[in-house]
Length: 337
Image (cartoon, rainbow, N blue to C red; front, side, top):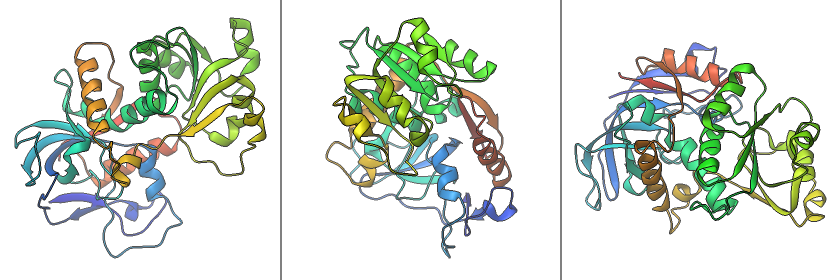
């Protein structure tokens, strides 16, 4: 089967940073689905795993943690899916990724893809939807049914992939949503998705929030930079409020700032459930079911902004370069082989 992978961790401008490969087609066992991949999308995790600084490998490393396709065959323990089912999922970081014609994935983290979306639009959703959903509803404890209605949340990095879904999900739960964005097009994008207020994350946040009536907020979801906004988050969070971050920190974080407010800081990593085979692993399937339903009912919008064809090393290098430029709005997908 065709695939894209790497043997060396190189800067993306190097031709060998991502290579076209020919690999054996895998066979499903147990809870595995073998999915014929029709579209994929890229996320910051792809560029981080590919980035220089790691040892070379003699076994090709296939990246990709977003896919939409059709079930080709199933393992003996599979109960929900059958060949021919159309699915979408983010996958498992401990297994070969979706940048290949066929991929094995545990059925417990897979859902039927939205009927109302094209395959490339569906491929843009899983990782960011899971991350945003888990961050808001599992980690921050916001009530998905609306019992948290009227409370406030700041979403730092609102125009990126996770931010794009978080803005919509927070609005769906009835929160007042303050999103950060800095460029004209990103401001327009988060407004289109339903943000009630938009502030510039390249400028101090408090002087922008107080004139529109916010001295503190109940929740903060930081999708951009944990270190850079740590002090600002501690300043703006309400006493006993909750903060969730999804980007690893590079230096020590001053916990005293949180202690004074008895504030909660939690991490979100959507790979945790699959990596550790947690007892509640099936929750990712359930939440993707909800995302697909909300998309089909018009409660959520798709967030795909650009599609490259076909899926190959050249186009995947272009996609990684776009991500690393820091100018991504929404998501970028690749379609077809």
